[in-house]
Image (cartoon, rainbow, N blue to C red; front, top):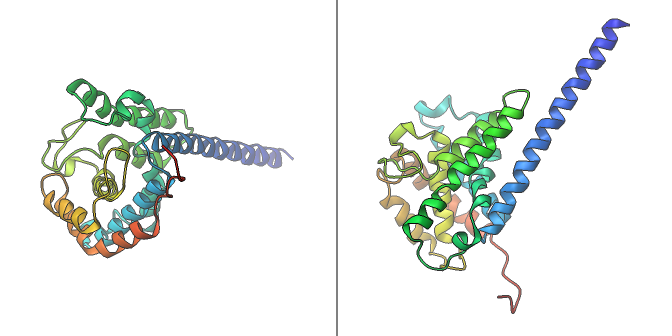
Length: 239
């Protein structure tokens, strides 16, 4: 009877911990969706960047150096983490996030802080969890470091080369490509072929050269994803 009671308590505790982890994930996912909406994006941006990251990771794991890092489980975690990369934008004031013109130096510093805001929110969720949650570790890396540049000229930490976490190096290419080919209130969409040239041009400066090589191999898939997962048109007469 005691053994059965202990087993029941253990099972109940595990169920509660699982529920708590799910609630934390769901709460962060809701915040990530709100951040995307505030930036003039939709859930389709998250869907596309998830698919781009998966495509890049699948190409990279064909290289012996990355095979151990990018098994099926790890790629699934990367895909799950991807929607949280811009979580911190929910903490950026509307007057900056929606400014139609160029940001001044002070505004740009505030905009850059979205990387730290997002990483801090995810870190708090990690601290409150009873156990390590692997996808949150990757999500924090993406949120903090997806604007780092291979040559060290990015932000917030000025990381360079492989000091930038792999998850963030993958997201950097996925996020920039999607931003280029997507229309926003302040810019037109760039043709996919031109966006491809921008990514190529950033090889070894903005982007990890090996990730750009993977992008080249996966370009047709990127093109197909961008054409298939399109943002809905605004209603007629919408401002």
